[in-house]
Amino acid sequence: MRTDPPTTTPPRAEDLLAAELALRYGSPLYVYDLTRVERAAADLRAALPERSHLYYSLKANPHPELVRTLRLAGCRPEICSTGELAAALTAGFDAVDCLYGGPGKTAAELGEALAAGVRTFSVESPADLRRVGAAARARGVTARCLLRVNGAGAGAGVGLRMTGGASQFGHDIADGLPDIAELDVPGTELWGLHFFPLTNAVDPQGLLAEAVASIRTAAALEAHWGRPLRMLDLGGGFACPYAAPGERPLYDVLRAPLEAALDEHLPGWRGRLELAFESGRYLVGDSGRLVCTVTEVKESRGTTYGVLDSGINHLGGLSGVGRLPSLRAEPLHLTDADPDADPDAEPAASGPATRRVALVGPLCTPADVISRATEAVVPRPGALLAVPNVGAYGATASLLGFLGRPAPAEITVRDGRVVSADRLALTRRPLTELDRPDPDRPDHHRPDHHHDDRRDLVGRTTRS
Image 1 (cartoon, rainbow, N blue to C red):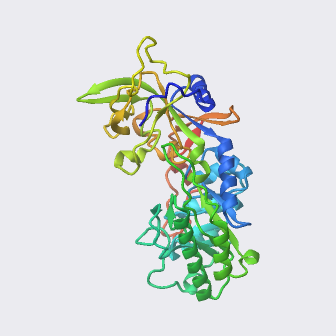
Image 2 (tube, rainbow, N blue to C red; image 1 turned 45 degrees about the vertical axis):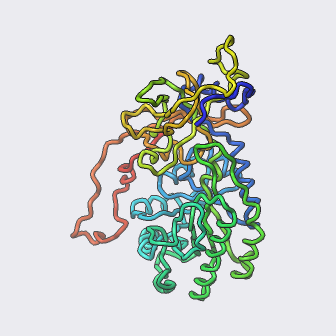
Image 3 (cartoon, rainbow, N blue to C red; image 1 turned 120 degrees about the vertical axis):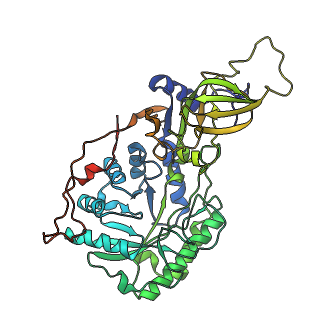
């Protein structure tokens, strides 16, 4: 953690803009630079095989302006809930462009997605496939389904593994390839395969090894079934720093070897196969900063605490249970000199004095720690700090409802100008009882039977 701007560092335009936005909209606030989103999409497209489709995983950040920017950049939406479907539609996507995935899909949400026009689903198992088929048959439509595969993988020691071992994700093929008869389900058409072996892989060679292993598995399944694949989603795993300084890696070594692997194992793929990749954090991660204010500095038993107006309710809620690394907040560089410096003091030969400093949030829990105590320059009350690289897994991945504090403002900008300014708000809606099935009615056993207003039972968020 650094809390002291070097005295010779000139003001940065993005810091001056952040300070202005804090005055206009209050602190804390997220600032998303849409130009960075466009640049990330262009970089990733250039790294992938030609004519690939790039899906944006809305779980990373469903903010409408980010989603809209990626739609205009040629991406498609990858969604895992009806809330994300609503965000994609709000951003101007057609439901038919969506790839709907995730485990545990219910009859109610499948019905809502199909009614909206979603037709492509990633399924985690034959049982998941049957649920999709039942919902599709009830509406007289056919759903195109990708079987998500839990394969052996390449064993690359990078990123966070999603499959390759025991997992709730994907159909496990460790004990043999599935029989095609098990996957011929009325209401569905087996359209292809979906792989997502790991996430946040900084090493391009490790990511390449996993993708090639997935291509080999896809070829084996195609041969086993004797049926050509129409779509192959090789997943993502593209990395971006999180809540710490750093740059996105470039994956420009991927295109040629991926195309060579496809040529070898799936010949003729260019003319018959829809090739897809997906990403969340890479596309939006470096677009976002969380700007917050030091409200108080206090001492306790040898440690200095900088208390901020933002905490795990706004960023990295999972850090409270040890699932995310300590975050990195840095001061905004607003002037050429340290505003707290004594103009008559002699310059220190070794720089400003440091103490053990921890940054904590405002919540009434000891879990609300932004960064653990380290040797650092003590922040000053009123100082603006910024956490970089939090365009992904920021506000909506945090504990927004905990302790009832308002969500942070979220501001999107392009070329230094505000595009949108809003805030998420949790709302409550009165419940109506479910239209429960009657055992004596002939449609009692229909798995998709539910009240038309069941969607109102799901908690919603609004923007204002």
